[in-house]
Length: 128
Image 1 (tube, rainbow, N blue to C red):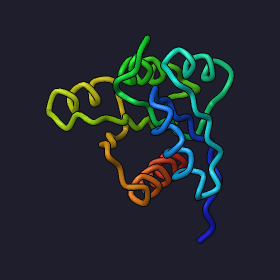
Image 2 (cartoon, one colour):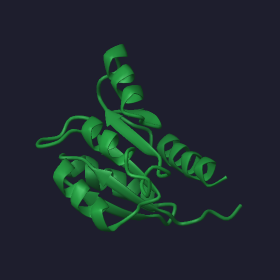
Image 3 (tube, one colour):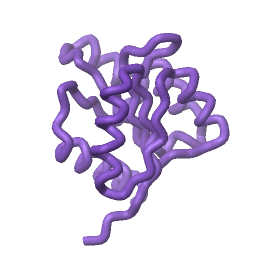
Image 4 (cartoon, rainbow, N blue to C red):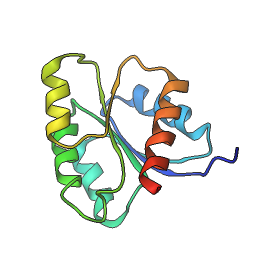
């Protein structure tokens, strides 16, 4: 099975988590654009359309919910799946994620293999 290389935007304010996500996702040959906050994510999205986005729920300036909500209103970006990254496994977080249109929630600490499969599945499902 030939895997396609995708461009994935990763937004997380924790440098260690950003680099871990880069390592995990680039293992499949994907190009990772890593930014440290919501403002940087929106700056990148003004000019670029990634294949998927992995956004930390809790970031300074602008959280993952807010970015997701904005992204889903932009036609050009609406096709890209948005995965929200969170340490909070509760109903309020799940409801908020659904409300802003997130495609999936990924819980910290995360499993690399599981994350890679979910990202690829979501992107492929969108392309059909």
